[in-house]
Length: 471
Image: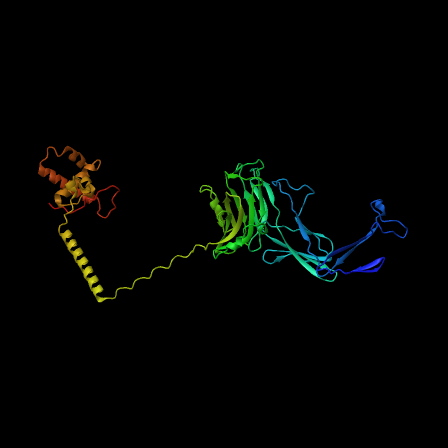
């Protein structure tokens, strides 16, 4: 493949099998002498060494594959362990850098995540770096960064690389009880706020750092894929993360870590499924409920479907994944009432019922007649030793016969002041015979009747002693 054209020129045929860079070098030997008569003995004189080189880029197709790197900038939090020093960061951003794409002259860049979310496509980039301003990365979510490298002839190469939220180290000594962690994304592609509640002296650390690390799962590094365990009652989500203790091989929980996921009303709308956090059991290679990692007295799990808030306590550090667990709502309607049995329409039923009613009525009549015949007379007042008012009060006595009328008249005349009968009554009729007493009483009664008209009104407190008198 080498053809010498002249003492100072030659031709070499090279057939590259792929796109690459060719470096062609030509050096003289110590026997060579230039036109000035100088030898090329570089051992005796280093400066006398002669030679030349040429770089040739061969493009047998698209550019060669290079490498892509990421740098994520986010505002520091007060509970972050050893935050990155530098100028204050107001808003998060993602810096994408690339190199090694031989023969490439311009690039296209965009990012996709979730089910169908994507960033705007940046075209005709010529530098080897670009910063995506306002890019807020979610914890537990995979971002696919796509880079297209094109050469002068329009041949292109597509490279896709996964970007994950960097690991976040937080101080877990309980000084800051509520740790606001990076947001996560629900299955409906809405942000989910994550807060970890840690009380003082929750752990027995083997080192004095008392630091916990939160990071997204890395499937390419060998982390378990939650979606491989999907069933009809269990479905994976985008919320997958790790909780670790850096530089700690042994950790004992005194108090559990309580995690609160706020989905909101727009983040969870499936009424037949509810969220359930599970952890990966490495030895048995299965997903278990995170609440089961705590003792019975420390176990806590609650789903508030009214506000879309899920809270759970964990007592184990490993890989965690949020699943959609089938849990249909409790029916609010009551069960249908049992059908009423058909009414009896047999004639014998009515005949028997009429006979029973007739027997009951007959018994009632017999009992009534027996009680009526044996009922005793009501006792009078005298039998109880009580005098009636007609005997206790003269004004209420009933006139029965002439003797009773005379007794009442005598008492009335005796009650009148200044009456001659008054003195006579008080004397008891001493010195008079019974006949004279009776005659004198009749004369006074007749005079009293003539003095008082029958129809004239009676004075208050008077007693009616009118009646017929006969000798």
